Length: 541
View 1: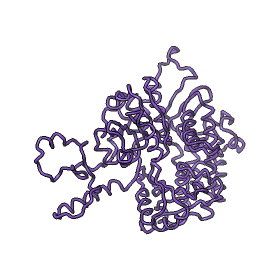
View 2 (view 1 turned 90 degrees about the horizontal axis):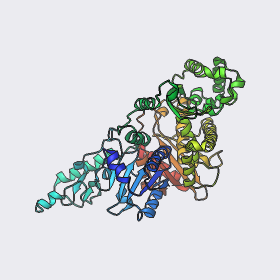
View 3 (view 1 turned 90 degrees about the vertical axis):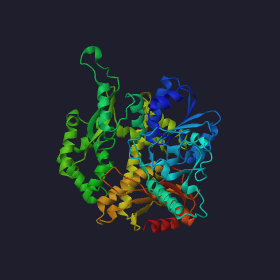
View 4 (view 1 turned 180 degrees about the horizontal axis):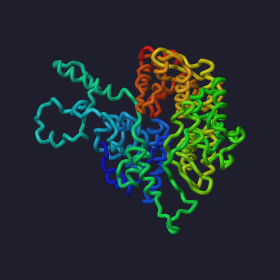
């Protein structure tokens, strides 16, 4: 059931209770968790935080805590499966789900007793109507039950999805038609995976901004400006140590303020793909670009904070002017920045790269929960060292991605399989351990597809999606497989690989593990890779 008044129906309900907070290991959930932690600390709400990396983790966490807790808050997990069917909770357990994964499972939508969805209904959810997909258990049994059936006709009553009903024989052809029509409706609704409004936009909107949804970046910008506004007199002036959030235009250069300008240009997806830096002509074009800006090579190659102030003052305008000459008209983007102290300045993208690198760190043999706590700590001003270590890890990851992309393009590792492109990273590939993590492999996949589209002359290949596989656990003989939609300028990128992976695995009896909250990411036995791929080609052809 969708919640309309989140303050009343969610926060005031859990404020006086003990709460189990089950949080997915991704940046969106991490930031939402930080917001909830602040709120819970302010109102002295007792909670237990449990990071979860997949469905198995979620089931285990619930089993361990179901006796101690009645209320469970799930962040970025749980919306796209029949949660009650999976967890089999007691009747008094209540789940508050704040999740960006779409489509939302229809049972979660129409259960009004145990499932509470903290999801923005303004999103184009396209949920089928109740009558189109459910029937009551006593439907067709006549009206003998009288008033009792009327009183028990709430949506939370006993019901079945039509695709779960075993049909042996229907004497009426109309019922047969209705059955298959309902299955078609569900298939159309569930065939694509995509993401809705970020949970870190929903939570501040509900609690901090008068319980109104923040619908877009422009609305968020107005709220930031309002909270930052101060009179110009001395009494209302901010200390230099106070945190200031600003909405501004900046450069589409990854981590450039914490790196050298040259390294940022070389390792940013936008500039690297536009210059085609994996080619000699691309390297030559980069040198011409730097010369056009008139920046000394010594300045460009040193750390950004060490560059001459005279150069940094006009740097954005200089880069934007030269970028337009080289066809990079989108080098300037809208973003949020945070400032405190004399030298601490971070962009939103800096925080994303740093915390994601900490979440999937492979530097030490630490658990996913340990990495989650480190990433969560990096969001606090008191843990700047942790944040800077995350930035260092992010730099290493970006350089590894750039080198892997160049290697894949130059050695023709990307192969057209007909309905999609395919790339497999072999064992022994440099930094292959890094890409055993789902977010790192997904980022590489997107970077590689963009680079391939820029470099290929085959117009048909430019319209194809990409499937990528990499070794996950050599000892267990498993690979991680990711599928992404075709490169597109629009934001509507619906992914059909989740369903396709399930069908391909089922038809070939491939040993797969569909444990990730994103259904387009699976784990597959190495020896089953060939037959799984053949089935996927046949299915999508």
